[in-house]
Length: 406
Image (cartoon, rainbow, N blue to C red; front, side, top):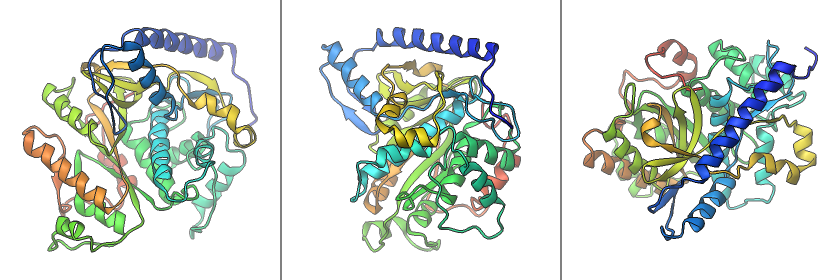
């Protein structure tokens, strides 16, 4: 399909979204709540609560350093569609991209051989127009014998996501995404065509509010652990060696129609862990990437702002210029009681030591909180099979399992 430009109606809709975004940002920047500490992406920030300007400046700095991905317009039509923009329907898709970008950024920062171009390499991975690369990806997907050394610069472009969403879940461009859909699609893309130097970042998505230690260890050490072994003891004795790190997403709920107040207390504790890397969530029918919290408010990045699309060549040729469209200068705050109950929690585990600490911290929270909403087990029950979760999840899930967030 030939490229087209937005029509008059689409331009007006984009303008309305941007005006609403700016108004909301203005109001939020005037209402930063008092109290400390602040928790953002696993960091604890202690600032004098009486100096409100310092608090605002510090939050803005941390927010601006996080990769911000928003609605885009005027990219080539998405797979089997006439859509050249994701305005109005792609916010969960963009939130998933932000969560994945943060995992890559965190991982590259921890690499011993980190390079100055890592940030630009991450931005390139999410280009809106990946030129001919999407055609190559479709051909690659249709091959019976996929080559592991296939190199793609933009594995998480909206073009590839839209193609894979149609193929795996029969989701058309313009349809709403559920949190589980976008996370499973990102997992598939990363496991199939990771960007260079991220091959040792292993991504796992856990469904149904469950987390299993053997699955985490199987992924990190790329071996199977038998049920008669004491997994924590193995980790503690440092008998295992692996260069792999883990990006973990746990799909869960914190209530039915509204957040359970006891669950919110547990969520606060999870957000205070140093491994916490954000929440794929939001409010009913609006998706946000939640970075952290101040008292009873959550700090988030909002994808509901429409920008011009950026293609692969533009990002490569004008790295410094295009960084600015991926950096948010506003603070957005959400009262925790307004949260949608369906979400994906994300954690980054750098090595074996962190895995042991993470698991024990999670267990400790469970011991203190009787209403802990995540099921923990050292071993995956026999009735649970994550080996083909992408292929099977479409038939397992329905509207009662996960609330739509758009």
